[in-house]
Image 1 (cartoon, helix red, strand yellow):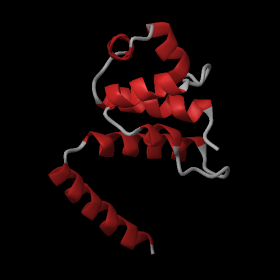
Image 2: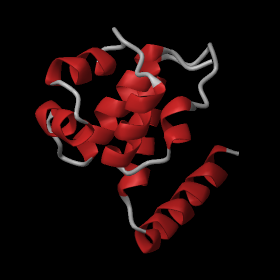
Image 3: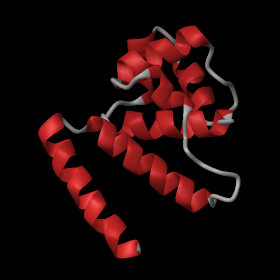
Image 4: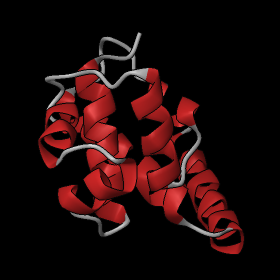
Length: 112
């Protein structure tokens, strides 16, 4: 199950990739800047209404905010890198995403 800290970390990365401030995201979601800060720090877990508002403002499906793919053995550093990669991938348009996926596939073959 994904934790509040994981949701918050992904929200922060998505916000940064989209070059939004917490104030921008607060305005776009009709929330306060403090509420966004608390979500990003994992202090508060967003309710369904807030998740929907965040997904619209960050241009990702709601389920992207609720799934991490991390297991309990994932290191903090690994989680941060994966969340950053997810945020960047969500920001790409289709043609560029296709190129990125080909590059990721090529990198995955190096690991084998």
